[in-house]
Image (cartoon, rainbow, N blue to C red; front, side, top):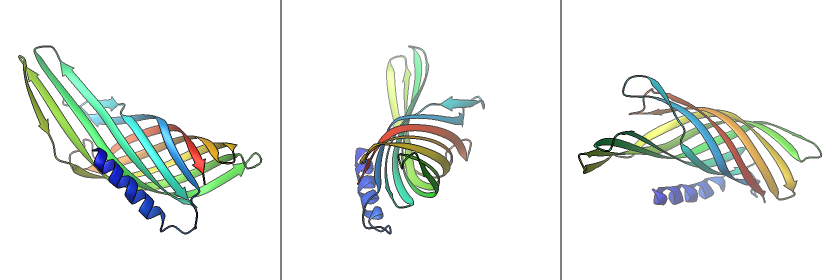
Length: 194
């Protein structure tokens, strides 16, 4: 999984070299991410999942690429019979920052953006019954996404930003239920201006 993340990071750097300007604008690391994602449980009820979400982005001009790792675990059962499902996904988001407003002596910026994603997810299920454990690992499954959001940044120094963002998105994948799967994510991070 780490290999995929580092491969995606190298793709990010390569893709950004094709963008129009000669220098990078901003690299952002989103350290605190809160996501609300709803999926269908085995009893057909919609259940909120709150995955761990880490992201890094690179923006040049009006375009950015964001690499994201999402992870959550679902557990149920008792000491005799238990079930644990681990979900991991890696996505590369290609975003267009369509509108931007700068105010407050060029220190505050609000941007509206939309994005498309491609990536993969994998699930691992561990079943325990009477002390015997079985682990089943699924295959990596292709997924896509569509998003729209708003980002607010405050420039603390000429090269350092604090960033907050809110984003709504939908995912499609062959085994997702429901399909598309809807979510919202709230991000807080830092940025470096080059």
